[in-house]
Image 1 (cartoon, rainbow, N blue to C red):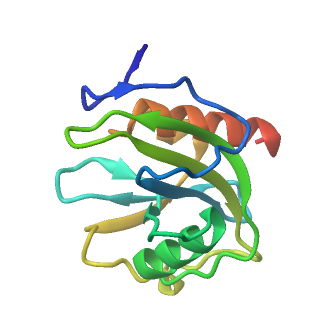
Image 2 (cartoon, rainbow, N blue to C red; image 1 turned 90 degrees about the vertical axis):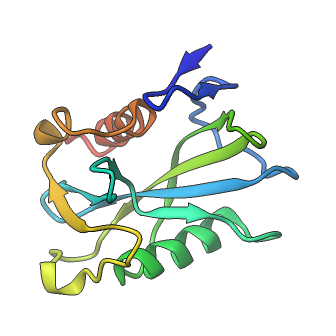
Length: 153
């Protein structure tokens, strides 16, 4: 069993095939890539970096929830999303399905285009090299690595 950096257990290993949403809660996250293959990360108030995205609403599809959450958290519109990885994470209340998608931006991202929600204190694009040194969950770091291999970054 894999343990994540917050001490929670991963009930299933990371899957590179899309997970079917069942009755449990689900969360969709985006690996937003700019034209220079830099990844957008959002900093939480606790100092941990996060991928844009969040909890899906009941009956919401992965891509619909992903687009809604990314828009809410960053102001960015997702036009393309491709499955990268997924897993089921054990939490205090019940297991949560996590899905991570590769979302390339069309054109170059400008800091002015990113409008960070009040859930985060900062948003920044990072090169893959710099991400390795950030306070980021092991699963998200692994998903970013998988996405980087797909785009040959």
